[in-house]
Length: 192
Image (cartoon, rainbow, N blue to C red; front, side, top):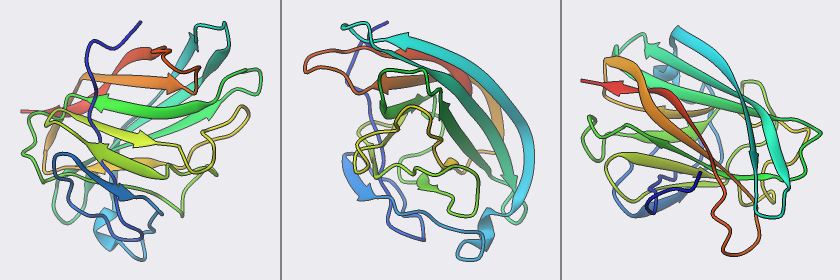
């Protein structure tokens, strides 16, 4: 499948998350529960989904996408986490992940970071938000998320208190110039 439009994204500063504004970028260096005690909460749902896609050269990217929703203990708001494990049999690396379905949350109320104190080894290097509904995290600094590797738990903090499974997740491989290959699946997102 090919995306129908240019997708949006967010980036964050190190250790503490920064509110995301349209068309702004931040480097993401990660955070911990010690640095961000507000992240403590209860896992409401945790689902692992398989994915497999191909780029125009036939290179494959396949693995698992762990999709998790956490309710913060103090604020009662929701964080949307993900972690990717890319199979060692893959022949393409992951360049970025775009999550849609965040249009019910007002602009400027999102923050994005990855957990240093969680599972995985590769955190995204940046994120970007170009429109209200979509948030993109980019695995650029390390040359992408390579076969056999796991991402850190990446989270999007929101002001939402409800969720549904009507969000859209786009996983993009590192592909030849002009290639718009993407794997698309549904996922958790804020609900009204």
